[in-house]
Image (cartoon, rainbow over all chains, first blue to last red; front, top):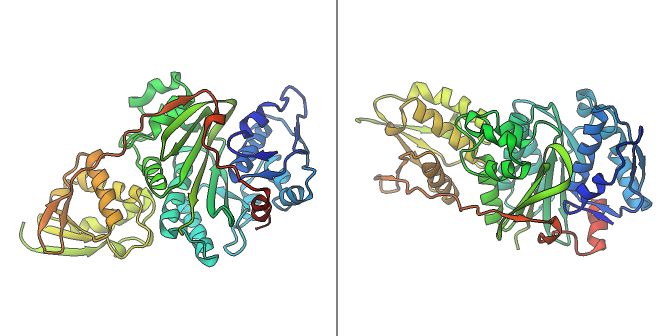
Length: 269
Length: 141
């Protein structure tokens, strides 16, 4: 089974949280896409904060099992994560494709991550518009810094050489879009609306927690789609996907706080 | 408006990708603004984000400096972002073109979203990897 943005919420919803120590059974997992990896991590981290420690049954696939071990997946997410731990896992410009990176909110975090991904793309001669990708990633990371109310998030970048596709995922288990938006009096009624409606609203230009609203998510969506890519976003039990076909939205089985996003862009010919 | 002062945006901040950096750039730009026209050159920056430009524009509007500001850019993408900002912020953004003439940016709204509600994510166009070989390569990368 490949865990992707299509099925990771269902996978998480099948974890029996009524158990004192719930079991996350990854035995049948043969691949985890960046979004799913970040989503799983946030699922563990969120419930860990609610006092749940999970038993994680590793994948039978030696490749995936070894990958998750290398990423210290269990330790990273299945304990109360702390900034010190995050600082011991620095982003490596040369080899950090496919690595999970813990990021800590800070004034220059967005541009730091953007620059590091930029360097990663250039150093590996990935044929995408690196300055553009840097901007999109900076915008998404800055959204986390500005709106999540959380100190920690995680991100991952992946290059698929045969598919010639670049994915970047970032997630937190903080305030989420609905509650952030409702802090702006103009959008207070969204507290009583669905996560999906709030997410769709947040895609509009000039809409946001602050009175003047923001442009970041709108601009990223517009430009990523113009570039031939797509963006998937999950918040609470809502999700949306922006592609050249438009915006598709809906509700999902798992209600995970915070925001988890993946952007996916094709390489140039 | 009399004399024209010129400022390179590139000299006002070390990076140009976040709204926070636009505050920094504006604080350095502010002493250079006045009743005279100021041409702000937006080119020569590899990564100039919409949030940065939006933040800068909002501060210029707030400080009532926008009528005295002319932007200079030959970058198609920057022009597009300015056109969208002009629409969203209902702002008259003016450019100094290659001929030295002043022209207003034509506002260009974002695409209408028209979201569709789906019963299931399974209906989405999947990006799932088409071959396990690629998956393996990627996981090894």
